[in-house]
Length: 505
Image (cartoon, rainbow, N blue to C red; front, side):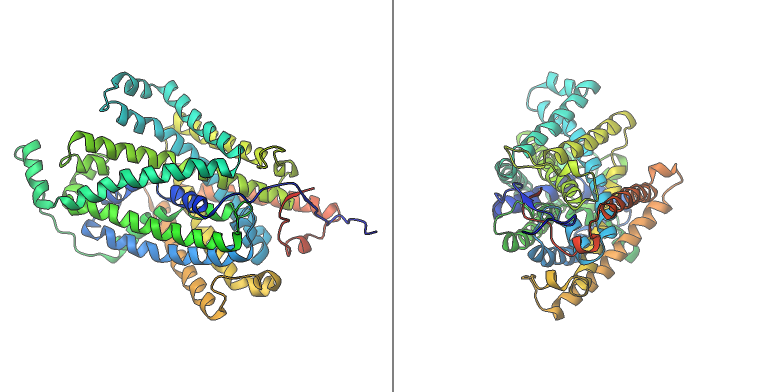
């Protein structure tokens, strides 16, 4: 009879593989296409002055490193289909410390972003309620305590959906995705129905005497690359598919396939959506309006559309925002679960709900951090710091995924032999190497933008806050790793093996 050693991890009843291909695709798409699609391509005229007519080109440029990162994720997901996705990939194929600290900053940024999304939902609901004939509801949603309560209600409702299981998440996300595409399709159809001449006529009718400004914006490479860095944020979210690796059916096939479908679908939809608005509205007018106030797709197309159609576009933006939450809650909780399962985070967090078979403690812990994000938005009125931290952490994670593709055959040949997507080493190396170069360039531009911004307190800059989070992660990692070693666990051996399919007994 064999006596279990301190290094032995026996599989216990744990996560269930219930999520199908469509659910995985919806998780990725809904995490990528948020309300930012209604704002970022147009507000870009203010955040990156001089980008002018080159917005769509900048988006296509941003898509290249995103596709390379997605290919790296697909390669690694085919070999390591486990909960925790990026953390598991880097810890088994590159370095456990790098995998933990990078995914910890990702977890922190995502949790704060969940709080930001939750807090922004009430104003979108207000913008639906008032033109729909419910001014009292709209006014109530502007009231501070009510706005805070609604934001918390949305967050914790989707926490409960996640606790009930990935099948509940799947049943929530698929209808939301369909509604989002239908309502977003109105923008694509309407934008291509009208042209700049139609807009000039509509503008003159609504604001007599006003004309579309005649402005030139010659191509500038530095401006173009800066815009590409901003637009790259549109692709953040597809990695939520990888975090569901422990609950996906036929995971080695479906995780890479879902990643490809989600990235391709999002890219096409985003391009068609932004292209339709710029087809109808001259970029020079967008730039002028953005210099005065925040601009959105509904506000721009409102010059051309009947109020009912504009309301439908606003409703679509609201749905896009709401559908961010279920997949993001799933992603952050599975990261925590994977850390705890490995023993580099308090083991209690790896607990599995006896009925729903979900990591309920990890879900609740992540939701508490997201609640901090909501309260931060409410009391500090700073929506964007958490998003900036998320962009930095995701760029670092994407870089690590590309690096892991390069290092995996050397660091862990047994796991590398399980790869089923892009099996040729001759194809893997250029994909990963080019990804490192392009993602590294975007990261450098992002950090430079943050550091070069007008002077303000360090805690309002994403780079030093991200570094502070990394310090906290380092302390947690080495403390928990020391406990593992002291208990007799062969730590090196643990990180050569994939986590068990179930929970840890």
